[in-house]
Image (cartoon, rainbow, N blue to C red; front, side, top):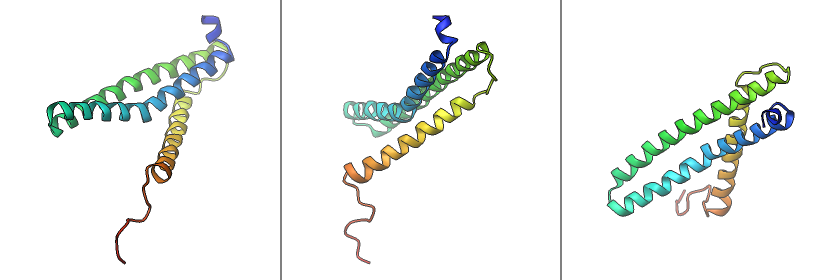
Length: 127
């Protein structure tokens, strides 16, 4: 297994896992905690409790995912060093986070304007 991680295939696998993890950060975390918050609000009829649980959950999940992504970035760096390549620091993690955030934003815009029935111009306003 260690030999696999020292190849280009191992680096690609780590990049893929980082990308999936960053999508979980941008998409999975908010959706999960919105759902949990709705369940708490439905069970307790308290919006404040639901918001508090959701806020704490989002912060904790984001911190956990950030730590996992940082560890994966360290694995990627070790992979590059073991193959005799230059150490790029956390540049690859930053690029993965920016690309996944951009894709997430684009997907949200497409969903919002084409599938959610939203209109870019407010309906019913007289000018």
